[in-house]
Image 1 (cartoon, each protein chain N blue to C red):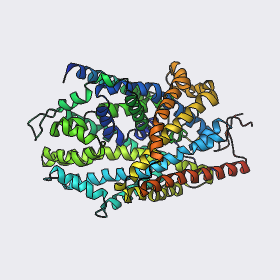
Image 2: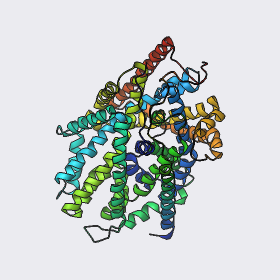
Image 3: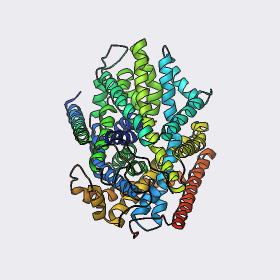
Length: 511
Length: 48
């Protein structure tokens, strides 16, 4: 029998936790870089189109399937999807909802620990008086494990996540979201104001902050119909909303059966967009370009936003004087930490929900199991960071799996279960009227868009599959496949256990 | 900033901010009381 009696304490807590799940490091480090690489201001058009045509429908689908599964006592995607259709295949599709969370958390917690460490270094003034190259060297030495410090902060971060998860939803996750999200927005607003109002010639800045904004928002309309730009926009929507992971379903499964999901989904989804579009565009690029110029930033963003965020910004903050450099560093890495931890906590709950539902484990035991799993799965990403294992995890678990799972779940919702049943579930207890066009979007447009994204990604996937250039990369690929198979095996065991105990219930069950 | 960039920037930021505040305010205005765990015994739903 399940030991899972967890629940949300308040509506605001649920919305903030769900928004915290979506708001992650990518909002601040990935979005501005994607915008720069894909047409600047013109990127926002495919980006918002993908949000409206694919992101919002997927949010509704995941909230609705989650709450539906919760009514049946399921809190993880294998059995949430299994509760929607009697087809056995859906349980195995649902395996992605545990696999992705475990594999992503494995490397995500490592980046989260960097933010914690960089808060500490900002506080003690490590970067004061250092040149840009010296700050970059500190980071290079850090990820190359030249000291025990990265491992200490990583373990600390894992322990913190495990402890908070062991306190449950209302006692742990919700409390962190209620403190972390307002602080994240406060820090973000202060840094955004500082970024926009940066003046050339003051505190060592070469250009006004508006030069960066101008660069970021000036549209290059020649790129707007490029499939590459649309693919990048769709990919960003996946990353930013945390759809296709299984964590939204898990959080929503703890919502009571007649409680609203439509307004909650919109509140959390749009809050994520606010953080990404408003705050995400006003910090990294305006400050970076203000101090280093457009050419340098374009060159640096070719390899993503991590380098700019961790290797360059601490040096730029140091130009603000002794007090402001500490405050700038603490606020920047503090907001990244809150963005990270609210997401990693969401990654822990599906795994815990599964263990509690299927094996009757206590919350504390399940949280500990999650922590140990992340420790073991994350070790290769920590030890072989420079060999690209981190990126390999990110590609397979944090990119491909999301698209596959989202495509399958929307087909299940719109076609297998049926849009009418799904629509009724979405509207049950709703505090807002969901526009009826959403039916068409969910049934036709979103699956087509997702299918397009998947098909267009196939050449790249194939290229990666046959890339045997490095042993650590091949080993990590095999490791991830084994992880998926192991979870599928446990799900199969749990399914037969449920059947034996007469607890296997789905939408087709009769009572 | 050039005028096109400025217009896109202001329109996008103000719309996203407005919609976010609108939904959040609406959700805040219609709170749901804290949960007393009134769910049926887990794994034994009461739909008939």
